Amino acid sequence: MDRIRMHILVCGGTGCSSSHSEDILENLKKELAYHDLDQEVKVVRTGCFGLCEMGPIMIIYPEGVFYSKVKPEDVKEIVEEHVLKGRIVKRLLHKEAIDEETIKSLNQTRFYEKQQRVALRNCGVINPEDIREYIAVDGYEALGRVLTQMTPQEVVDIVKASGLRGRGGAGFPTGTKWQFAMGDAPVKYVCCNADEGDPGAFMDRSVLEGDPHVVLEAMTIAGYAIGSHQGYIYVRAEYPIAIHRLQIAINQSREMGFLGKDIFGSGFDFDIELRLGSGAFVCGEETALMTSIEGHRGEPRPRPPFPAVKGLFAVPTILNNVETYANIPQIILKGADWFASMGTEKSKGTKVFCLVGKINNTGLVEIPMGTTLREVVEDIGGGVPNGKKFKAAQTGGPSGGCIPASLIDTPIDYENLAAVGTMMGSGGLIVMDEDTCMVDIAKFFLEFTVDESCGKCTACRIGTKRLLEMLEKITSGQGTLETLDEMEQLAYDIKANSLCALGQTAPNPVLSTMRYFRDEYIAHVVDKKCPAGVCKELLSYQILPDKCRGCTACSHVCPAAAISGNLREPHVIDKEKCLKCGACLEKCKFGAIIKG
Image 1 (spheres, rainbow, N blue to C red):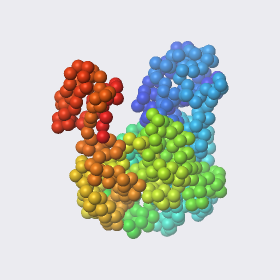
Image 2 (image 1 turned 60 degrees about the vertical axis):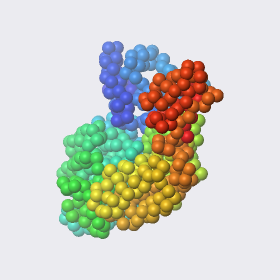
Image 3 (image 1 turned 30 degrees about the vertical axis):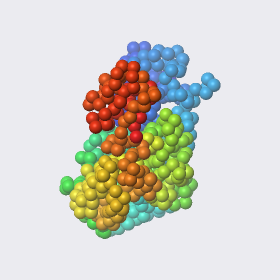
Image 4 (image 1 turned 135 degrees about the vertical axis):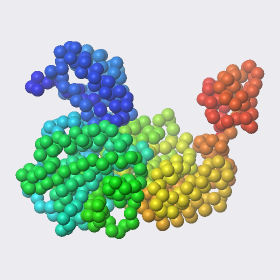
């Protein structure tokens, strides 16, 4: 190992793996072996670096040079030029990597400058399949301190003092939840919610893929704090890489004595098992998740009693999500005051978001609570592409709501998001531009909720379906102003009468879009127009005679033969035949076809 002079880190997260990062790794090993460099250059498969837009990413140390959008066929050039000759392959550098011939590191890009990584601190840094690398960055030190120097109450007190709130939804104080579960019950459980079913969300998956040991360490700390000896990680089966690395981590932890009997010679026993979910969104709700672990259909239970009193197998249970646990070891090591110094008065620490949608820099970001939406969209995200205007951002997934452009300076924390009609949720942040129809967005999320409703309560099973039918009437031009009033009333009825949080929050996308974009709803029902030009049944296509060159390109691609005209003469569209597919609009090179 003393001979190693260079480390090459390659992202092995799901996103980059789907873009052939495994082939890149394989080619690297072959090229290094060919040049007899395999003993002095170490190749490391890491977790997600975060800047998914630029993947696959490769970082070469000690220089810290990062290459973006690397292809397997680029490996030969990288090895021969950079590794052998010390000449950086500039064509593969990120656009921000060169400033007056100075090579910048990944952390110096706009994407990273305003981030503060706590939960993600090891993602993209260590090999998640090697416990020694986790130990090298203070891994399991917090567990050792807890088991040898602290009482269970002291552990709970430091978590409470930190102000850490649950990162999976409503933001319930983590330490308070742990306090509720302390008591004399002979059997208790610690559960981890790694189900993560929101569209566009991959925060927890990335932590599991890039730093699985942090979750195991935190769950063991939680077990000691409440007096539990068994933990379960409920992870969806669609996360094969996360499952694979979690199982490796569990096996390694057992071998090293960090799981199992008499951990650190303290007399404390704790073990963890995986439970795979089959992708039901409702199983993100804590009681439904526990019901699923028990082997039953994942349906929520009435509360109270709450899980801290009667949870998994009817005994006291605590449940936190992956990101919440990922903060625990650092809070133990650095103290409650350190964590509480970040964020706002009531929302402490950082929050991980999946930044997706109409944004230049899609990826995984971790920011201090209180960072404004503008900073996330314009600074970290690099703004909206193609010169389009920012219109809204959706937070909280199907349970959240939309923040309009007029509120782009809203600080992102639990209280401010709730005040504008949305929620933090698990951390999805979907950016929308001027071409987005907000009625269609509401319909998209409601379609998801209808599909995912477990059907146990009438308000959610029937109510969301009726609500969706009303939205479909509106987007097809059959809605009226009365439809809007009926829809709003039904939305509040669903919120008031649903059994669990899935149903109670299902109307939020509808209510928030009606609150901030009511003019779009009115345009759909009164003018029978979709201002964004998205709702197909409200569209019509027209050829502008003064711009049409009569090239016939549009008529050749029309599947319904709805376009007629002579060569070099203006063409016309038969609106009765038109399928509104948009093929003609895409084909026209002269801007002669418009939709509206």
